[in-house]
Length: 387
Image (cartoon, rainbow, N blue to C red; front, side, top):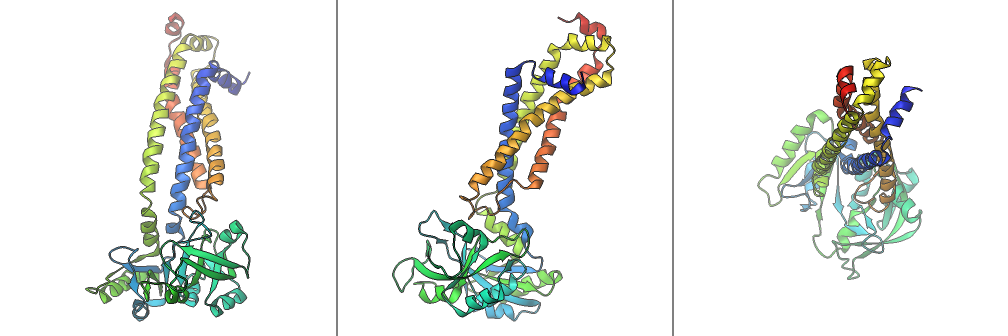
């Protein structure tokens, strides 16, 4: 009989107790996998941001507009290589639950700045630039709705009103499909001509959401940001210029401090499971004190007994943790289509899975160390004398 067989037999000696502990660990790692993946999806914009890309937004809040005239002045600042702008459309397809990440952009300069992130063919780009009523659709969105080039698509806004129709709908023709330029690039979006929106919306004409720019080098980011903000100091629309990573973090923060939520929930679950499993393991080994003493009498060395007890807690942690992570992956796959607009790329990523495995190892070691040490130190005479 090998050690693994002994560990498994001891763990399931009391099947109900073992199954309850496995279920508790399963739930803890299910929660961890889902929440950690949400946090990763929300913060993905920070990791994909270009080092030399800055965003100029209203100092009050990024939801407040800037004058369109600011774009030309930003382009004249020393250290700025390219500049464009985009505005949040607040769009949806057919009904509000079909939420879309939609931006009204200055077409040519926007595609230039995001040339490494979003790819279109030369033909698609030319078609998009030539038609003010055209739309570029991310491949994720196109696959979700079955859209293809040439389709006529109505999009509605929960922010703007179309002054030409009195409604909230704009009609577009799909000119091309946006494809990821990098593995981590997010293509869960649609973009269209700012001029089309600006000429037809009823209010806030000649205003934009933010200016996005590319500096000549990341080393001059702070200098360029200071120059831009000083340019509009004491104006009716003062600016705050930040890196793209910082802007994406601010945007994600409107949904709450996801990292803090993950830490609190997972930490509470982990500590609770640690206490339950640790206490149960101590009780289980105490119940088998005489058996441990018999094993030592039969010649089992103390290090081997230490490994058997520790192996029991490790096996318990992995029997609950691995299915928990698998269940989290299945849950995330089911939620991905529903939450694509809020958490693009939602999935159980390898770093999250590896962290989960590390936590299983930590849980097994933390809960098994004390019982294993007690078994290691057990005196044979004392052990045989216990009831």
